Image 1 (cartoon, rainbow, N blue to C red):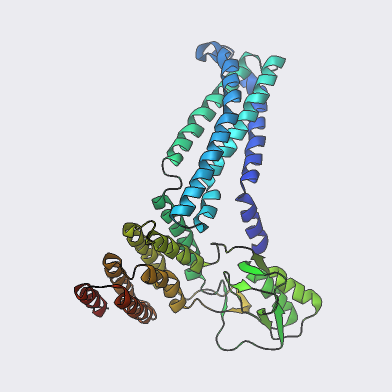
Image 2: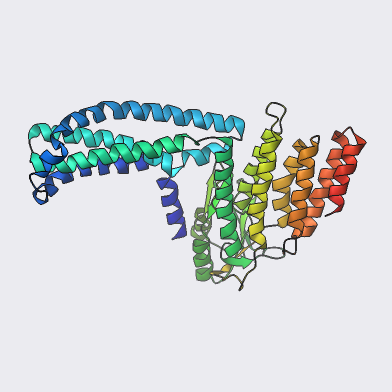
Length: 408
């Protein structure tokens, strides 16, 4: 059930879920020392100084809440910094970062671990052997968690880190679409059937489509479902999200609507275009007069090439069709290139270095072995050149840019 798996994945990205799991794990770790006590030699306690575990737990309990509060403030500051320096869409990836969530969750779990440990020590349920387990667990929590958190703080929320995160999300989505160009369904070509149209019950962006559920519904009805709204599309309650070539009842219409997860914001998972858009936004923001950082824009263009190059990779065999009763439009290469490069050519029209790098980037993409790349690259090159003509003052600069464009 892909839709259920997607919902579980979305839930697992919530900080409170991970913190709750680690809190339970912390309590369990403190209690397990009681069960493991008979397996520990009695003389180990004196050798490793386990008698001091009570003092260590007192320090841990008093410091973990302060560390958690400080870490939350640091993360919020990183979100704000990344949003102002790049784009607010990056903050969602930072919030979902598993390393940061694990660190905060471990701090909460450590506090509960130390609290339960102190209570159990005072109750006298551990004994000398149980103290060894508690001592090892305490040292492990302090060393591993704090070292990982320090390493993460050194780069968390920086511009380079933000670009890397968006690129990784875009690569993941593009790789999935390369493997299955129509999300496992058949390619929709030509006009859809007009027997019945299904509209969304909510207004927002399509975040995920449960194609398996749609295929199952179409198979039972003995017909086909043609998807109109791809992941990332903005939908409302008036325009169709899918077309059916059979007459559905109310239950079938509700089932089709349930297969489309519609939310207030776009999601990276099934939407490769969103990753390209966010990377392009980072470049455009860097080229704004307030920031004026062409280097970031140039670095972002390199990331865009790496993401788009996935579509040009050779296939050893045709993509397998898992859902033969569902038809989904393939990604339009022109749209991908427009998402990636039009905002950059608009924002960087007056910067020669950015214009040259953009032309070189488009030239590199034009020679990839993809039937549509060259035409899309040439179109973006002409647009960038036309915009630069209105922004560049020196004829020499324009001549140099035209020379780069003519090589495409």
